[in-house]
Image (cartoon, rainbow, N blue to C red; front, side):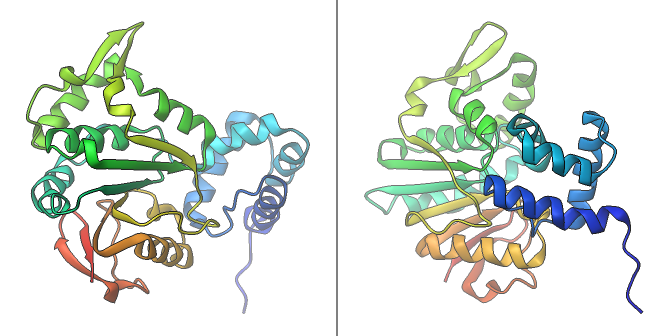
Length: 274
């Protein structure tokens, strides 16, 4: 006997197909549990009764879609989040990066940019900034604008600083920003090495060959098929023996590409391409 679908599960594919056809953003392979949670919140906040009504509004009003996109994309981050991950990059990946004359790093699903600037600071302290280009990509244009501005609330800086020190920071985080208008603006010297771009792990292809790709706390919102696609994309973007970092709740276990990688630090989800 087929399971009985509720209205949400019936209307959801229609909404996601409409979003894909109208705006070319593909959420059709995102986790059902994640979509249910995020869209329920969107319906409540937007005061809309059903996904069918939301679909109608989205198709006719790009402003409504822009608001919906804020719910469908991940925008929760902080600088040096999970400090031991950055310590693993510093201690186990950076020595190998030093052997290359030039380096490319890709932060996939960069959200509002906290991880990008964390890696920029780390590479600066390790003497690699001058020969590194960082690509920071996301599908949310508003998040990319915040990331590119490199300005964050001063109320968050204490937490950033604690993470930075736990991650093996060699100075004070305050060396990298100045306070202005209630925000912390990170040094312009860090920005010359970063390029921001719209890129979807669901629909786009490899755009460069990189030595390190960091994609953390993104795959948990994908279903298994899309996870395999995203990891395959990152694998194909890496140079031979390049490195990949995932989020603390993400794994290569049961992934179609598990045999393509070896563990560098299994606890911190740092892997190396075979």
